[in-house]
Amino acid sequence: MTAPEDLSDELPAVAALRSLSIFSADQAGAYREHFQSLSDALGEDVPTRLASHVTAWAGRGEPGAIVLTGNAGTGKTAVAESYCQRVGGELPASDEPCEVAPDRWVVKDLSGLSDDDARRSALQAVLDGVAAGSGQYLVCANEGVLRDALDVLNHSDFADALEEALRSGAAQVGGLVVVNVNRQRPTAPGLWDALLDFLTREELWTGCAGCPFSLGGCPMRSNAEALRDPDVRRQLRTLVRLGAGEAVPTIREVLSVLAWAVVGEHGCPKVKAATRDLDRSAFTATSGYFTRVVGGGLQPDAIERSPLMAGMRTALLGHVSDLEIDGWLRDTTGAPDEVRLLAGDPAVAEDGADGSLALAGSRSPLDRVRTKQGTMTFQHLGEIVSTSEDPTKVDDGLDALVAGDGDSNAPAQVLWRQRLYFEASAALGGPDVASRRLLGYRYVADLVELAEKAAGGEDVVIEVAGLVRGLNFLVTGFSSPTEGLVVPDPACLFARDPGSFRPARPSLVYGLVPLDRLSVRVPDRGLVEQLLDVDHVDVELAVDGRAELSLRIRPRMYEAIREAADFQGPVGQGVAEMNDLRGFYSRLASAEAAGDGIRVADPDSNPPALVKVNLPHFATSRRV
Image: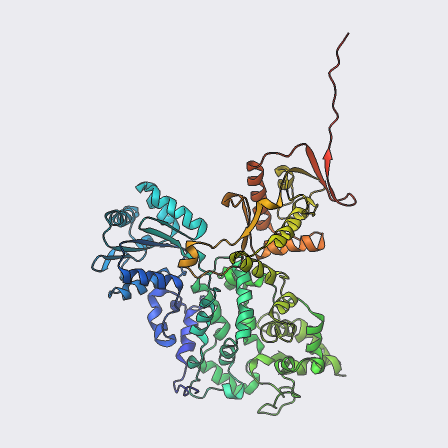
């Protein structure tokens, strides 16, 4: 049953989403202290595994302490609020240690205390309480503040637990549990859909008084409707996963990016006024979620405020060409019907309300583009470019197609590719194929599959051999995995141009690690899986299962390894990734004994080979 239309001038959800965005002046809703107004509009908070664990612990009343550390925006304060509600108290207004219920203590933010002495005193009180086995203590603190306090308190168990939590996500020593909330992943199963439902569920978007959505005029409701589609959510999850490979995504940041994608800088009064004046020409695909989610409508300095958005932009969504997809924009007649609908083809869609030829078949702002010839559908733009005999129209159409206006009006072919990535994945061969065709990452689906297999304890011997093949080529130019992982002499690896994946020719070999000593595992395992919402995207290649001899393989690193294995050629630059490789092989060379004899990896030999160098032997002469 459809919810009744809201009769207010602006939907509460619209105002709430604008305040969630960190890209505008009105961003108070992005912070927990101002969450109540958002809760009134959007409903109950997004449930997380950590909040469920902490509230269950509160209900059991077990003595001990849980210390939450992590970046701002990871949800620590929200968990503290859930804890307080569970024990019948309220979230403290100040950051000092507060007894919110009998024998239930909360330190909302250790870094908010006045000075170092106050922080150490608060932490010492918590440690004393844990040692005495009396009461429960929930502490929220940033890593730096904890380290500074522990350096003076000299509590080795706590310090060891903190270090372990920072490495693996969570650690427990007796009644003390330390959780690194930075390891929480918004793309985790369950949490991802809950975040999207929090902002876009249908009951929030019933329409305000005079809403032009039914006339195809409201981009905000069109965006919210699209983001309720499971296929769109799956494709967006892939994009956020890639962005998470470049940055630590917090719940606050993800909500902010999603809020910008849905409403941007718009508001209900603005949308209604513009639609009244310009009818269906008022808004175009530049207001679509598919371009805003990667920074559409924002200046570069604003995009830099979001490491997640900047990371998603490295996927080059909209800037990777595809002959068939680009051809559908110029001539939709041979495209599948679902693609023709997205283009606004009047042959498969009902005519618009105003009956104009340029907007015939348009169903929402998401299928329209603005040109010097006026606003028109994707289909009409392609028709002008392909068949018009008017050179002025053709030139204007080409400008809109490949250039836009350089600011608010993105090139039409970029918008087209972006929309098809999200909404036509089935027509492109499925979500994995769509990602391969339209993103700058060809192997993201393979990395996710490998991570899932490793997390499930499945056999990954073939995948390990593939990783070794690629790594061997990256560091020496010799790709065969037959003899194992080639460990280059560290001097050869450090002599490279910074960030260059192009192998040195030739490269001295320090040693070899047999394949049976290598394993692939996921970074988030054990206790952290029980406490946090995790999403297995990255993997680690470990030698003998040792943490200090492991290489973290994120999407960009995996891309370089797979390209090296598949194409046996230079695969570009990656400064951070190359630094990770240097560190991994340096640690490996320090831990491993040197090989017997001198070997050189010579990629220019035919076939490429590891060549053993025999030095001349000079016998000592004796005079008779």
